Length: 364
Ligand code: GLU
Image 1 (cartoon, rainbow, N blue to C red):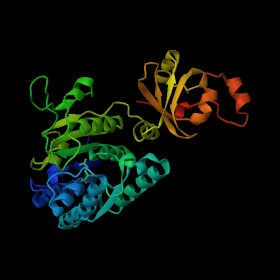
Image 2: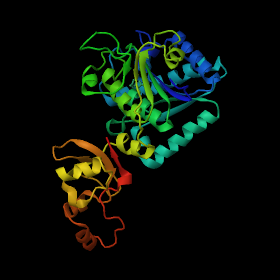
Image 3: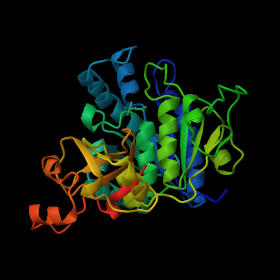
């Protein structure tokens, strides 16, 4: 395993808190000590920390995760400041300063904001601090939510181009439900069978579970990042994992990573529209890296503007790509199925006549 220059460590609520929902100071202190050691060895570390909602619940004496969004948001507001206080205090013992970064999905979906976040994270690292990242639960409502910190941590790993993403959870790794009943140590490829082994969570304070960890692993491995899922209860877990002797499961990074802009197109979007293409158009798009032309489109659904990212589906409805469209959903009605000379007559001022240029099209 190559030496890690940059890693993202994600800690779930179950790892950070006791059964009563209080923060487990000794575990957090242990993690800080491990991170301090890694830093001395020259590894840049980004932390994605859950726990805000759970801590807020404990402060308010709530034993069940509230269903109403405003109540969850209030819990997060109360818990987040407690969470940061503890990270700050524990890292201080090692002479390390931390920086709080709270994100909504929109902060990474909108290209200009995504680039801004990237710069800030790198700046925090060059100031020798540890960024402590969480979803901005207090303001994020359904449509701008990541939903779980596994997804957020994978997006951060992709954004900073980390060598490894380490997801520490109460689960010891991915269990082989179909075969041995033991942890699968190495996963070369995330197949449908692997995905079927995952389930959700039963922890009242947490969200996610193995399902979201596997989809996070899918995203991060495509960014060329190796992903560990291991128990946060294990002693000295971070150096052990990084030296290849740790417990848990390791997802092998994909051989040829998707480039940064295409990752953003493929995985950071929630498109509001879908273009369906003719069976004959699938090959040129997926195997030959061609642009999507109007003549190959058979259907357009949803509402979108010029410049939005849309899904591209095959004739069976399977979404196999995403890309930036040069036409709005209104224009698409005119555009679908047309040849280039017809489009020229319809849109004489348009510089780009293809619907999605190949540089702005990412295969999933
Ligand atoms: N952002 C949530 C929190 O801090 C946690 C989400 C998750 O654990 O995936 O409570």
